[in-house]
Image (cartoon, rainbow, N blue to C red; front, side, top):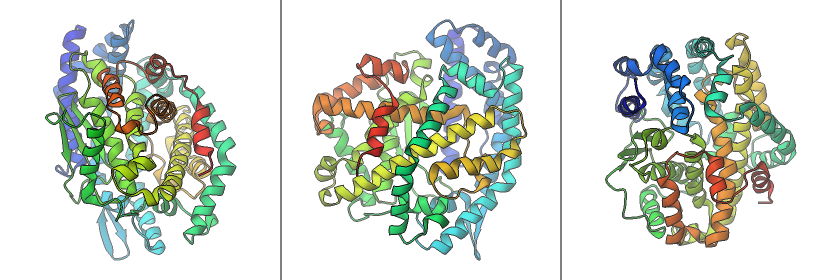
Amino acid sequence: MDSAHYMRRAEEFAARLYTEERLHLSGLKDTFETEAIFDEFQDLFTHRAVLQRLEHREDRIGRYLAEFAVHNYVEQRLSHLTDRIATAQNATTVQVGDEYQPFYQALGQLTREPDRSRRLLLEEGVAAALAPQNADRAKRIAGQREIARELGFADYLVLCEELSSQPLRALGKQMAAFLDDTEPAYRSRIARALQGAGINPAEATDADLRWLLFAPRHLAAFPCEMLLPAAQATMTRLGLGDAQLDNLHLDLEPRSNKTSRPFCAPVRVPGEVWVVASPRGGWVDYLSFFHELGHAQHLAYTDPGLPFPCRFMGDDAVGETFAFLLQSLVLEPEWLRDVMCADAISGPLFESGQLVDFWHVRRYAGKIVYELELHGTDGPVTEMAVRYAGILTHAMGVRVAPEHYLFDVDDRFYSASYLRAWIFDTCLRRHFRERFGRLWFQCPEAGALLRSLWRRGRELTAEELAEELGLELGLGPLCERLLAAP
């Protein structure tokens, strides 16, 4: 199959797959049925078609198509397990005392439950619900290893590293050192915050920390009904408020089976982009929504004339960078004063936001260290639960349940994309402030620059895009931001 025909079929496949994901995660469809979609587009992911794509990696489009083909070939082979896990998860209920809650509802409730005894019951219930599904998750990881070897790679880690051209192992070493270097400062801040909430740091669990960081707070300053107007006002100030209305869709309706985590579904880029969320109010809710809005704006402004691989494939860290850039506005004192009329709480919010950022970066640093071990060994997958709990407990500073050891694993080492995006985002924020001032988000010229960057889609890597802007990426500025006195 020639590349042009392959790209046309691949675009149709992606539209079908993301539509299925959107319907399932938004609670509009109880089952998750990707196997039938892979069957319909099986010509894209035959062994022969994948080897053909691997043989034609001489240019950027060829590399992107090869990565797309291989990862979807792996997923096609394992789609029966993916569907079974997702469907079982959607049907699972979590027992809390005499009550039962849908799995996703219970997962979201963990960050909103102020009663610690009930919160710990929820945490135990979620872990108990995950445990029976881990057998299928272990089979899926083992399947990834086997298929990687069939395609001529040493293991799944090498497959991901070669196809993405990301130095995953080097990044893992860098982040392991980051965890050690920043541990004293992080643990001191976490302990102080836990003690302030009446929780003994030595007894704190993952659920305690997530509640401390993400519970809905400042509801009066961040009301649910103001979320969308605040987003629209922000885009208007950037000179972007009157465009992309036809191709950017919002699903903000509450549903019991809707995932608690907002997400962006790029059904067709740029023709049909969705943001799905369940707004509840509070500053963390705004952070999550603005993050997904950053993804959506980037995708919706992508030049439709770009080849499909440059609109849809490419480097995930680029999209995450723009998501973090818009998310960061929620903590800017000037934005709080101008858009939310909430200047009085900017100090406490900044301190809370800095702690959330510190937690996020350390958590994903721990994830990549763990995932490199998980995919870099031939040992039984089921033996990694204790190792997961140890690494994530060290990274987050609180006790983490081992039952999450496969639920908390993303395909394709997506943790690396987040980490690289945090590095790029820190440098990009500094660039916007230096070029347009601290009120850059009120500057149409800054919006014009964003539009020009967004039009590039995902053609360039994060490092290439940074180089075009004259930015030198490194971990130093990120560490400086996280360690700065609140």
